[in-house]
Image (cartoon, rainbow, N blue to C red; front, side):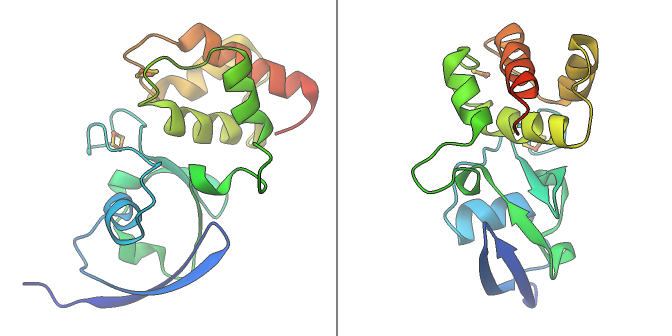
Length: 158
Ligand code: FES
Ligand code: FES
């Protein structure tokens, strides 16, 4: 039994004060404690990208981050991307360009795709593929994902 530690984090604009075991990952905190199950667990070891979220605006594999190391930070998950009923332009683009099949990898792909543009790595198809290479899609939706990112980039939105 581990002693719990108090943790203050902002998730999708909502402040939480939580009591967390030090061994719990950010991914498990989001899914199990906060019931935000849009963020997926694929490999649980940093190899698939399904668990990608933004921490203080930077993409992170949440399975590799211990929850308690996020004290005072701002987390954005797929649930926090839309603006009310209005989808984020990247969510719209994934729908428009068929950027998914089974959908299991999609939350992580979209979070990485938003970061790809925000961090300035969407200059060319090759650059997008390189930046997105940590997000695995078993369904092979890669070409459509790249198309979606390029469309948002060209639209000047992200
Ligand atoms: Fe985190 Fe696979 S579940 S990288
Ligand atoms: Fe099925 Fe990517 S859409 S794993």
